[in-house]
Amino acid sequence: MIENSTIQLQYRPDLHVLVARWTAQSASDAIEAGYQALEQATQQYQAHRLLVDVRRRPVPTPEQAHWIAHVWLPQVAAACSPVRLRLAYLLSPAYEHSLQNAPSLQPSLQAVLAPNLPYDLRTFVEESAAMEWLQQG
Image (tube, rainbow, N blue to C red; front, top):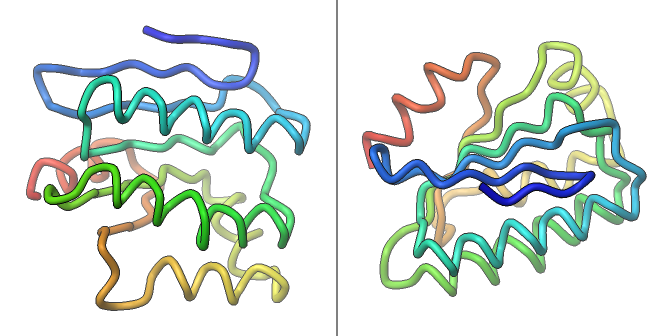
């Protein structure tokens, strides 16, 4: 397990899933550092199934959401190639509501959920459903 003040990373070899949990309400500049740690762990464990628990993390700013959608996700997907990357984002109901009601985040959300991307990404409010979906791919 890898842990810092922002994110906890644990590879589950029994499930072939890398679990990333934001551990506290992180400062906005710590979000990018957390994603970079996740990318390094993805490469270290050669993981292509990621459970990303953002229930304790603040909703990203439009700039952070753009960076995740247009820089981070393509980099991680390319690093996993030829295996297809699958990401299950675990949200609280309040977090999901905040995302859905933030017009400034909609372009980035639509970008990561668009068809024909080199990865699969879905959001969940129940961890068991997220893990089940990850195991299907």
